[in-house]
Image (cartoon, rainbow, N blue to C red):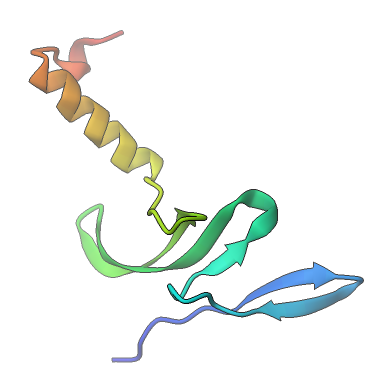
Length: 86
């Protein structure tokens, strides 16, 4: 199986320049304070390489779905059923 890969470019002075990966293998997008890279893992019941965002310190940013699942679990810990909230 071929390993997943990506190339990231930025537009500088009218020309696209290849962005090199940092030591984490991520591509820094300095103007946004984030990094883009490939994460291998399980997401929505699929084990695949996924294109994901990290903060500029290398912490994986949650997707909206992951965040909603975490918050729903926290509500259940507090004996609140998130499905009954309006």
